[in-house]
Structures are given as structure tokens and as C-alpha cells.
Image (cartoon, rainbow, N blue to C red):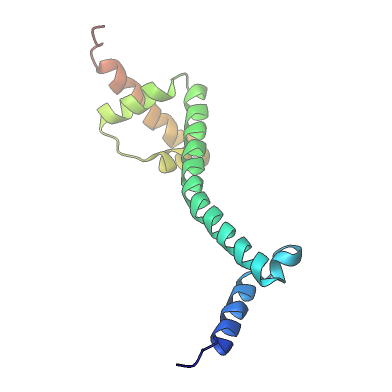
Length: 125
């Protein structure tokens, strides 16, 4: 059986890798071996950071809500507890947007949450 070399297929594979690596710094965009490693590493970072972005955004929303709550004299944890007892179902993203774009509405929500948290009996320690 004759020995087969991958002529066209290998050239296409290299071309595909170098096309993906276009714009990378230095030899990472020119040399096939370096480009292949750079693409793999970039893919790993992209996969990881798509998840980290969600974590970072949630932390940002919580920071914004905390700042808005402090301006109204209530702690974040008591505010969220009050929201739960008041039956107000808003996620943190929407709460942070309301705190930024419509402070009067956030005041109303905060008042309802504070009243609902005060109406709950204290837990025995």
C-alpha cells in the first residue's frame, strides 16, 4: 500500500489556523506552531472569561444596590430580605438599573422593603 501524505489537507489546516491567528503579536500570527498554541490558549481564556464576566457583572450590580441602599439608610441584606417578604420579585440587574435611572422608584421599593422587613418577627438566637 502506498504511503499517503496529506498535501492539500495539511495546507488547508495551516491556512485555517493562521487565519484564526491573524492580528496576534509577532510570530504568533506568522508561524504555524506558535499560532496553533496561541489559538488554543486564546480559546481557553475566552471560555473561562465568558463565565467570569457573569461573576463580575453580578458583583457590580450588588455594589450599586449596596450604595443605593446606604444612601437610604438600610443595609443590603435587610433590603433584600424586605423585598422577599414584600413579595417584590426583581433581580439584581434590574434593581441596579432602577437605582441608577429612576431613584424615586427605588425610594418607593426601598420603603416597601424596609416596612416588610420590620414587620417580620425577630428570630430567637
